Each structure stands twice: as C-alpha cells, then as structure tokens.
Image (cartoon, rainbow, N blue to C red):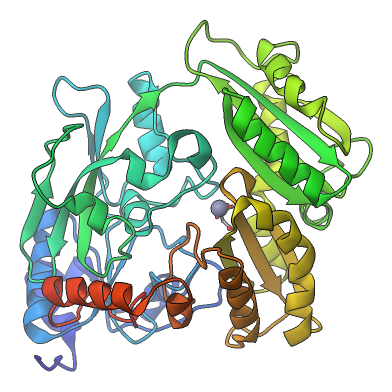
Length: 465
Ligand code: MLT
Ligand code: ZN
C-alpha cells in the first residue's frame, strides 16, 4: 500500500495545470460541505479536470501514491457521499459538460459527467425528445452524480430510475485506465454489465466521466392535479390505485399537512385547496402521443384520473391545473419541501422504501419512533408514494447525533424496507448497510471493490466503510 505524500496539491498542479487545482479555502469551502450543512470536511485540494484524459492522469497519480479521492458533481447529494470527510482530494467533474448525440441515433444522448440534468433535458427537448429522470435539483445535479447514485426522482413509476436509462458509460478506473462501453445497443449479452455495476456504486469503483442514456418520447399533453385526503391511509390507497389503473400516470407524490403548511409559511404561498387536508397527492398525467396541447381542465386525462379518485374513500378538495403555469404552482407544494425543511434546521435525511402495505402505518408511527429517542425533534415526511419511497426528514437534533438515524433505519429494516431508496448509502448510512445486506453480499461488495480499487483511493469512506 503506497503512502500518501503530505502535499498532493503541488504535484497535481504540475500534472494538470495550476489553474485546475484549487487550494484557497474561500473557494474550496463550497466543495467540502454538503448541501444540507450536515456533512462538513476538509481537503488539501480541489482538482477540476477539463477532460477524461486529465481525470485519468489524476487517478493514475493518486493510485500510485495512495491518495484518496472523492469524486464530486453538483454536490447535491444528501448522504455525505460527495464531500471529503476524511481529508480526501476532491475531484470535481463539473468541467466535463459536453453533450452530443451519437450519429444517426436520436434516441440516445452522450452526456459528460458534469452536464446538469437541466442541460440534458434542454438538449433532449431540442431533439424533440425527453430524458426520463427528473428531480427538483435539476439545475445543479449532474449526470456523473446521478449515475453514481442511481438517482430516482419523480417519474420512476413510469420510466424507471437512472439504471433503466443507462446504456453505456465512459469511466476512469482507479489506476487511470479508461473504460468505455458506448456501443449503446439494446441487446448485448457479452458478459458482465459494467455500466449497471458502476451505476449506484457511489464513486467507489471508478469515476464516471460520461454516460450514454436513452431518450424517451417527449410529453405532448400534461395534466397536474392536487387531491386532499382525510388520512394518510386513504391517500396511499388512492395512490396505489392510480398506479394500477391510470395508464397515463407519470408521478404521484405524497405530502402531508405539516409539510404543506411549512412550504406556505416559508415561501408565502396561498393554501393549495380551499379546505386543508391531512394528506395530499400531487398527481401528474402525461401523454406522449397525439396532438400537443397545454394543460386543460376538461382534458380526457382528467377523466382517466377521476375514474379512480371518484371512488376512493376520504377524498376532500381537488385542484386541477388549468395551465402549465398553474401546474408549476401545484408542483411547488411538493418540490419546495426540501428547501423549506433546510430553513428549519440542518436535517437528518432518511430516504427509505417500504413494502406497499407498510407505508401508511409507517407515516403514522415514525413520529413516535423518533420522539422516543429525540423528544424535541420535528419529523417531516413526503415522498414518491408510487414507489413506496418515503423521505423522512428530522430537524432539531444535532448533526452528529445518530440516535434518530439508528431508530428510523432499524424500524424500516424490521418492516422489510430499504434504508436507502434513492439517495444512496454515502457516509450517513454506512453503519447500517448490514441491516439490508447479508454478510455474503457485503463480502461480494468487498471483493469487487478490492479488484477494481486495490489501493482504496476511490471514495474510500462511503458505502463499504
Ligand atoms: C426529493 O424527492 O425531493 C429529493 O429526493 C430530495 C429530498 O429528499 O429532499
Ligand atoms: Zn426523492
């Protein structure tokens, strides 16, 4: 195992140019703390390569000298997986922003790791198509980070998450060799599926420098509604009925009375419905065929939804967006949750999945589970209810106090759920990975890690810590 030199910055500057290596702490500050403010580290240098060969040069040197690296994209991660908590070098991929289309194929797009989700969406739209994964951090989340974490978001129930879009990657291995699997074929049974292995590996196996992704047909008609319910249970049941029976469904998101009230307070928004409800669903319906229109309240999409909502028990008021602007306004009550909660305090973000039958009970029981270990904590819940994915956010406990994390993650695992639905394991949940993964699985993870990164330089303090 090589011993890391005391000052890697000078050598890295010599390799890729001094302007690509930042040591000034007033600039590195934004690279060493995560978006929530819960995870704050330090670094001897932030390296900003401009191309794949510079990433390769940096990693080859780090491999040779045993220098640990944290790859970072838009730094929108929520589990401390993209910040240097043990003094690692930060390898920022934001400079790799190019986007191109493979020749003769308008159903694929090749995006550099630093391209944002918004960049990808804009380019897809210019080609008359769309990218299936969407999330609130679209302006800053990058392709590399989304591949590294297998990002999910709002439309997984319709089009799947990042894994389902990914058809190829270019990545740099720990020793600096470039791995390229960019044929982009739908059927290709020629051995191990390396893009899928790297997707969700959180920067521990290789540094993704570009991704070849599928584009789906563009949305031609869209309708957004918000429906109030008298209980979480009736809302969850209606959401599951929509998943089964509404073919045009592209999102069904759960928000609760407390979270909506917080968003209204923090952002000065009016109430979304005339009568407040205990739980709400924000529902989006789309068609990718037929004539394009703006959203209309008498659209046949509404009729499709009404056939389910009208016979769901517990339904209160319903708002149907009459225009795209109104649809955006309804989405705000869901999408502004993350920012509103951060304004209350530094959150513990516990992104989990439950089996469908356990979700409503979990929403009812989790405040008491948290209250038992942190009586003054506040619990904020919302999520992608169609996937069983609940975002449990806890404020009012110190960043380092893990009693709440322990209590919630054990509760989830005992009910057959996953301790990470879409944010990854990162640093925040590494202690509890064994709740979901057997020793044989963990040994297999360790064997793969050992084979691809024998000197443990790639994000060594996350996931398999
Ligand atoms: C979301 O669904 O809004 C994201 O996962 C971010 C969050 O959980 O705060
Ligand atoms: Zn989410």
